[in-house]
Image (cartoon, rainbow, N blue to C red; front, side, top):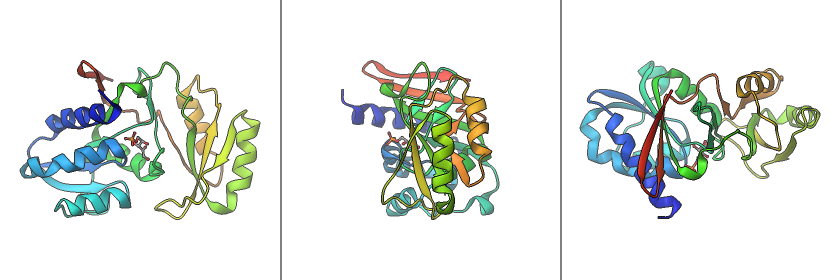
Length: 219
Ligand code: 5RP
């Protein structure tokens, strides 16, 4: 079974969490794209939808959905999104697709966060995947120097501008033995919009698709 089959299976398993009348937050990425393509089949269970990126909004609209804003809906019943890494505490690294800030807002606004991944994403310690940081363009060199002081290797995602008009710094080799502390420490640097460590608001449920099916981990 290849990674796409697993992602599709994880997305399918997430449909069960969408109950009638759900106000749903939709994440971003290739795993979520599979989910979006399945959503028309359960359209009657969805009250309203909020999207975490322009890319997901475009795909949702192509599938016939009207996309609301978080300001219009208030808090979400459920947020479904992928991740680049998860540990056993369901703390995540996200932002491979550059949508981390809006994703973090929706995860925070949601009563329940279901994360859908293939089994390559489950790790013992976060940080093999470079940590994305959304940064104000005028602060990028300063934030980069701070990351070097924290023994990370920052690399700018060249030519990439986020939906919020900012830049992404991908930080390699960070030692993330304490994700909660690392998230707070990086978020405190002026000019940082969001770091892609999701430890203060981890997933509630992780659906991990492997060769033998989809298993569930809960927080
Ligand atoms: C986008 C994300 C994605 O959830 C993450 O990159 C996983 O993507 P994929 O489902 O394509 O593997 O955080 O900002």
